[in-house]
Length: 321
Image (cartoon, rainbow, N blue to C red; front, side):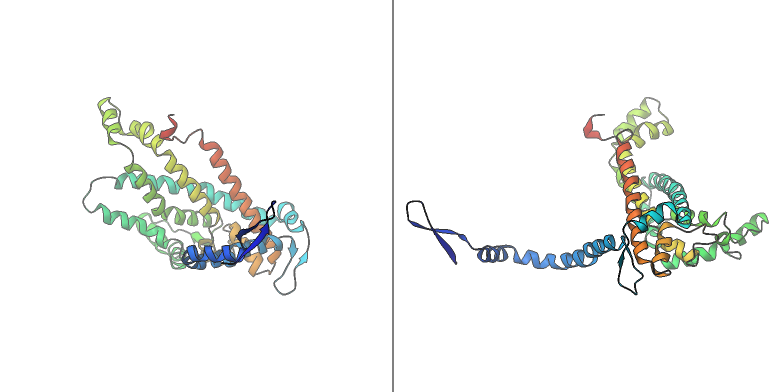
């Protein structure tokens, strides 16, 4: 091993620490195999995540149309988005309504079904798999196309309404008053993932608490609000944050159901869909990059609010509260 020598205070020569090359060689011999296994992830992270993120941040301050070199424009993209882009403001309104309705309703349905499946019923494993299936398929293009057909003017929903009640329904996906609700229903239908998480949380609640409450005369509804919900609060919080982020990122459903236009009358113009149209339909890539960073800030604000308010309603057993 190559080393360098230096003179001590009394004139004697002493071996210095190994050179940088020797230290790197030693590290490679000890951990080289680990770095080789990590290489695919590192390459993907640097090339597909970190690199594009930095590029997007730079492009958000430029005027870039994919065809000509980016031109620095400072904060113009952000100023236009915040103060002048009325279509963006409508997209924000649509997205907020979608999030505020779909997330609580999805969590409520998921919790109810988790409590139903948290029973020693024959074949319950099969039921759990069936109920989880919508979460695997719901975000796919095929399901979005099917949803558009179901809620169309001559779709199955209108046929059932006519047969059962004689009511002739409109084309729900092309009516400004109802189009967004078809997407909210689709989001609620994808309850499988939070349901499984709720089910895991319910399994952690001691049954002794329910037995003691029953002996004291507490009815099931009181047990739910006094035992189940408080002890399940950390799981509710986790699902709330996760599903809120997913709702803000919803894209495929709105794109397919609206035909890629956000219609009718921009009633299904999600923020992500508007970002996509600005980037790949209008070729305003710089402005789209700014929109992406604004969305990141919005999601960060909602997540921060959830964490700040969690201290008032989330119960952790180890805190002794």
